[in-house]
Image (cartoon, rainbow, N blue to C red; front, side, top):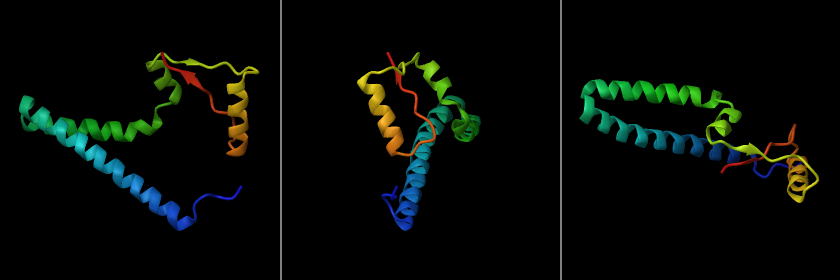
Length: 106
C-alpha cells in the first residue's frame, strides 16, 4: 500500500500534533494551577504540576478496555452484519494486524 504522505509531510504533521498537545496541556494546566492557587496557594500549583505530570506519563499506558469499562461500553458482536463486514474490509485495506473491536457507549 502506498503511503498517503511523504516522509517530510508526515514529520511536519507529527511535530504539529506534539505542539498542539503541549498547547492544550499547557492551557489546561494553567487553568488548573490558577484554580488550585486560589484554593490552596502555592502548594496547589505544585500539586497541579505533579498531577499533570503523572497523568501525562501514565495516559499512554491505560488500556482501551479500561476506558471502555469506565464508559460502560459494550462490544459490538462480530457477526455477519453489514457493519461487521465493513470493519473487516476497512481493516484489510488499512493492513491492520488485527480487526479493531467496536464498542457502543450508552
